[in-house]
Image (cartoon, rainbow, N blue to C red; front, side, top):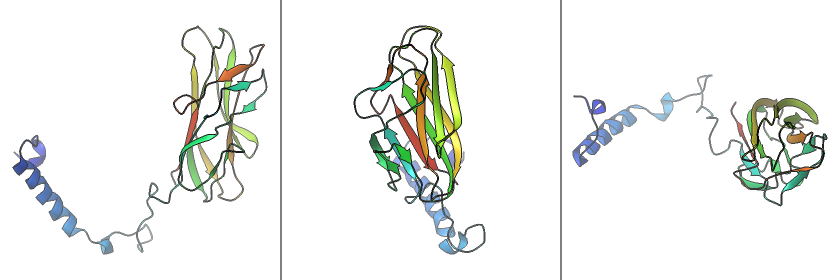
Length: 188
């Protein structure tokens, strides 16, 4: 039975696997790894110098007025590898052109049956992606999320997240990194 066909159970199995891995690694040299043009090392999209952002609503609950798209105030950061998230303007402005995967979420507090909820991604002040839903039953406070792939030029383009509802009185969105958050990563 080949090493990869069995469960590693003993120290000898682990040493054998390490020996195989060492043999493979010794056969690959830095000169053999190049980018698509055939010169230089490839730039991997998830390296240390790649944009990775996670922001969330850290302050008090945010009150959202009726029928008005309102900027979601993601005022806390879990990480921001290139300082591209602004916690004052609640906008992401990348420093490098490319395609960015944006995932965003809000958690609504106490919505009533029959109300409409909207969640939007705006690029340069214009809505480019949206998620809308109608509350069909009561129960847990509903979360609303969406994901969009957005090309940004790396100089003037920016994105922000907005939300809205049609309840007759203002509704709150929750705080906390698990409730109201967004994540952005440059993929190409």
